Image 1 (cartoon, rainbow, N blue to C red):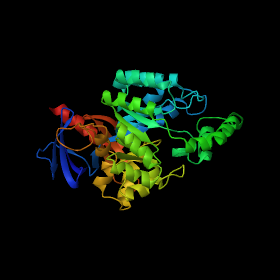
Image 2 (image 1 turned 135 degrees about the vertical axis):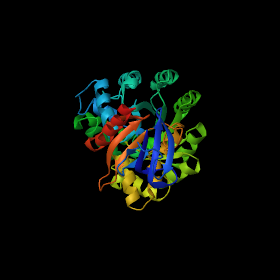
Image 3 (image 1 turned 90 degrees about the horizontal axis):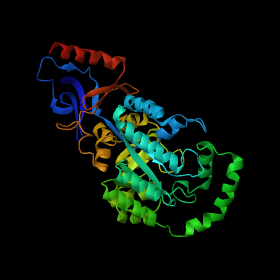
Image 4 (image 1 turned 180 degrees about the vertical axis):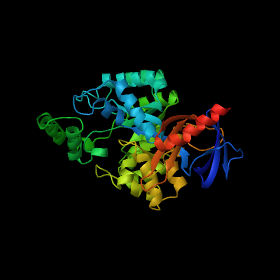
Length: 398
């Protein structure tokens, strides 16, 4: 199948009027100009970019429990989320699952294992390529053997090392931690009162004492043994980046200040920032602005974090604002995340790679018209369906 009359966003340039051939689920050819066959599909001037790759999406937990104690089955939540991901151009999604707050019913160890095992076994039923990003808290020893078992079973494709202890990292301002626990995890003021007291009592100890990285080192070693990339999370000091780099971490997620982002790059790490942060121009927790960090040249990758649609919109905004050319902003959500986790079969419009392609209408608010994964349409709206009805007609004539 040939398509032409497309703007093609390649890793190093944009072809304003081009054509591409799809064969057996792969991209077979990419050309400038019209297709060399008369039966090519007219792409209507849409912009074709590689399928978007999201390395950190927190949405599945919120879909399982959209409000405190309002629980839906994991498979139902994932099927509904899967449709939204496809509609926003995401073809590869790493669902972030946390083993974090034991006091939270949703983020208990048992619930996390149930989510991961369910997603693993239903992957073949999904539109997108769903993978697991396991989030490990450094001070949670009970998770170590459980996560090691999941890694050995091939159920986890990315591990991040987190430290949400208040008084450092993302919650250097402890009031933000309390607000998060209240607004997102459903804790009441009465339930949080003892926490206020514990936090106040431990802040000086937390800030003064060196961190114990032994559990993190064990998890990173296990992940690397199974060919799984390890990431850090909310880096806030050069010492933390140095320590985790030595242990084998190659991805820095959401550094909270520009110094940490620069240090991560100097250590050869891929730096991830949130697409919602980049689109809005600032962090909702008052940390580093992803928009400013992209302008400073210290960001390689954008992730959905909590809004799937933000990936495309952030890339377009950064381009239209003149921060980067279009092919470079698109790399933030396609080729660069693929490189970070060694997905060598996708992320670029390049012959021999998977035909994961998103067709975007370049309107004031860019719109995904069709999403294709491995040459199959997994989402198309009424505009896109006009094109694909013609595709079906062409195939019927053969």
